[in-house]
Image (cartoon, rainbow, N blue to C red; front, side, top):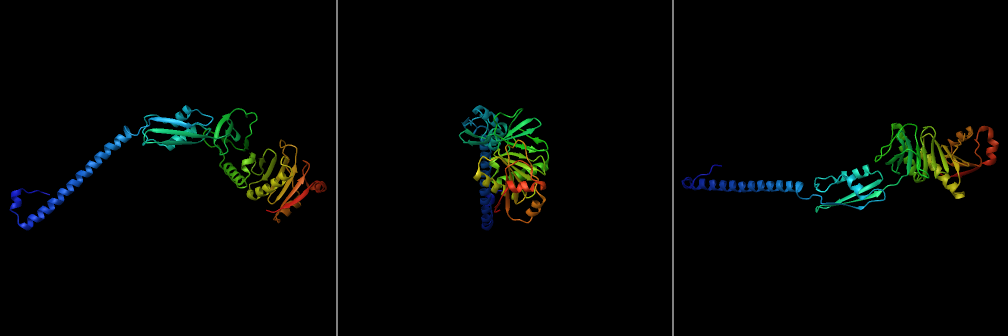
Length: 326
């Protein structure tokens, strides 16, 4: 808007002068608002620059809980954090992930930061629970599948769950192990899922998926569960839970082979050791009967001999059949 001189304003008519003064007042008000906004942005930019360069920098890094495996210096080094790093620009979630990846025995890392500049780190250790053979050696992992280390020989007196697969198992310390064969991975995940649902997984000592038609699981190093194929795994393991409870009620230290290949029909074969697997061949008449029954038949034998069509009399003599509800 063009501003007039006082002489020009004096020569205006009263109506024109009033309109001019009203417009001039609005223009001056808008100029003040614009100047205020510009000042605000300038101050904000300067403040942001100071915050990201000079203010809110890390002044101290401490480890309040180190766990039993790594020292405080190792944890700080693995985090990638340094004094002088800006707190507002640092991704502390990524720093925690770096600790968990670079230090495999760390289950969880927690980082707390303050604007004053202090940073504290605490870690929780994980424990070895699983071992498997890989191209680089024996991979040791925790119960969640995170690879902790790779060794050339199985540690003595190691009480680990063993995993056996047909294809290659890929293991990198700090990451979860995986299977080269995607179908084998799906089979493993499905089996583990059903074991967890059946509340058996925590006490499983071996999983063998090397033969898709003959899946095997060992429970507490004393009971071998023969699952056959992956069909109806949930039903098979439900029957396995009942049989384990029944066997434990008689003798919690019993060593046996539990045949769960046929859903809803279970055979228990007492054996002296799990070292030499004994696969039970079921009579044809039992296979036919199992398709139409809704109960779980538990047959216990006291020997390790195969049960075949030619040994029906021996089976009848040594077998006790117990019906349990589903």
